[in-house]
Structures are given as structure tokens and as C-alpha cells.
Amino acid sequence: MNDLITVQGVVLSAMPVGEYDKRIVLLTRELGKISAFARGSRRLNSPFMAAANPFVFGTFTLYEGRNSYNLNQVSVTHHFVELAGMQPGIYYGYYFLELADYFGREGTDEREMMNLLYVTVKALLNPKINDRLVRCVYELRTMAEQGLCPQVFACAACGREPEEGETVFFSQKEHGILCGTCAMGEREAVRISDAALLAMRFIVQAPMGKLYTFALKEEVLRELEFLVGRYIALNTDRRFKSLDILEVMVK
Image 1 (spheres, rainbow, N blue to C red):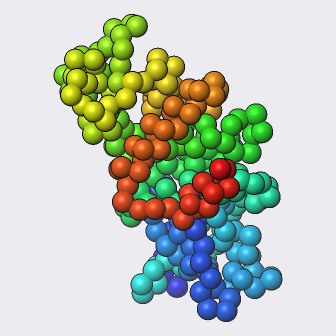
Image 2 (image 1 turned 120 degrees about the vertical axis):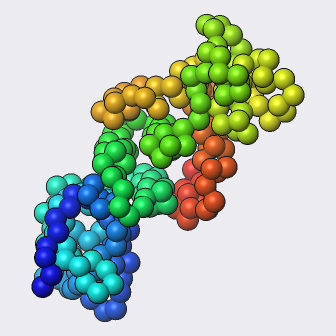
């Protein structure tokens, strides 16, 4: 057997292969996004049976095969099995995994995205936190972690920081806020409320452990959903399957 490699990661997806195996996609701190075969994981007595599933966080020991990694051992730290029985929470979770998979790359340090996924799944399990808010926070913070954060602290056109009480607009085209002067002639720019702007600023810079420590009034949440949802759609080139299911469920 080749030399063993130990990584910390989370299972983003798992697909059956053959009669007894699975191919899993892992987001790891050490190797970025990788795939690995969990051989025999669909057998009832397999030590990988519980570990080779989405939402499993743990330490994975691998060895390199000819074309991919192979799972040798797993130490599970969190598996979040209770999420499976939550509707529509489980579909929010699958969407979050899909988004992480979309941006994940091999050879990158995915520590922050792993931490974001962990605190986000914990938030989904908290009945006191609105799932719609969880989605907005996760989407916007993901864009920030991927270097695609909209400009929310100064005008994206002139660079001036808006003064307190000044009317501010959000432009999808300019990837951020615009002052009143720069927004003139930008027909797609929409006014953003002070509350929504404060929420966006908090989301993109708060410590991971504090991300889900606030709530929004319904009208502000709807505004945030509109702005962040459009921003995600315009900055990705894929329609996510779990998002389609989720949007049907919550209508």
C-alpha cells in the first residue's frame, strides 16, 4: 500500500459505485477538494458505512491509487444525522454542500469554507434561527471567502464611503453599493435600506462563531434575499439541483 495521508475534511457528496462501493467528494484543509473511493462502504458491516455520507466531518486517512485516492480509515467528529429528518432544512443543507463543491478546488486551503459549513449546519439545526436567514448568510459569506464579495463599505464606482443617513443603492452590475451620484443612470441599481446594508457588512466580516447571532425583521430579510439571491445567480454559471427542489418546497 502507498504511503498514508491524513486530512481533516467534510463529505460534500457520495455516489454509489458498483455493488458495494461509494465515490465521495471531500473538502479538506490540507488538499482542497478531492474525491476518494470508499470501498465496501455499502456493506452492512463496513467501518465506512456511516462515514461515507454527506455532512460527515472528520479525520480521513487515505492512500493514493492509480487514478484517485482511496479511503483507508475514518474518525468521525460530527455526522449531523438529525438533519436528515428536517424539512426543508435538509435541502438547505444539500444546497450549501453543492455551493461549496462548486467553488472547491484541489490544492487550496479550505479551512474557512469547512468552518463556514460547520457553523451553518449547526445554525440549520437551531429552531430559533430562520432557515432563510441562514441561506442569505451562507451565500454572502461564501462569496466573501471566494474573493467575490460585493463592495459594501464604499461606493463601488467612486470609492467614497457614504455618510450616515445618505441614500445608498446596490448595483449587481457594479458588484456593490453606489452613492446617489454614481447610481444616476444605472437603471438596475436599487435602493438598499440601512438595515440590509448593516446586515451585509456584518456577514462579510464577522468571526465565524458570531455569524448567526442576529435576526432581521421580515421586510429586511426579504430585501436581503432578493439582493443576495440575484448576486449569487449572476456570479455562478450553474443551476443547483437542490436549490430547485428547495424553492419549490418553500413557495
